[in-house]
Image (cartoon, rainbow, N blue to C red):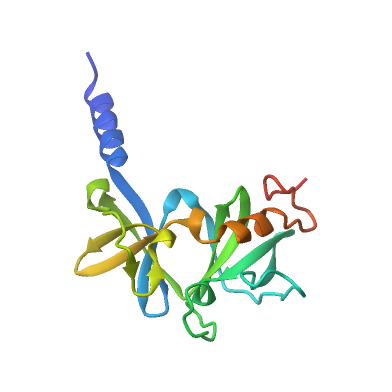
Length: 178
């Protein structure tokens, strides 16, 4: 027979399996969410070094503790007018296409835990963003939050270009130090 502690642990695990954990970010005036499991870390904004003749989607690179990380500006990705980085601007370090990348966002707000059933399929077009960028939509406390599909943030051509990016100290297949 299971102890109370084991039953509680089992019930907690079951509840977590039925919940989505999302990081709420802002880009422009809209809220978006990223699956917490795709995030490596979140850092304060640091200047991005442009890379000559880089693919258009690439804002540049940053040096993160010796690793050169490609960075994508989400305002540009979503065709939102550029903003000036401010104290709440962050770079969300994610794993995409089996590599590490940074996403410049206007802010990181909170961690959302919502029942998986509340994450609805995305509509065809939401605020001008094609639904291929989205994995779902959540309504939370009167807010509509678009859940980003990080595997689809880049087009198929851009994914190939991104996969072929190799910077000093990065292995192409892992994005980590050699």
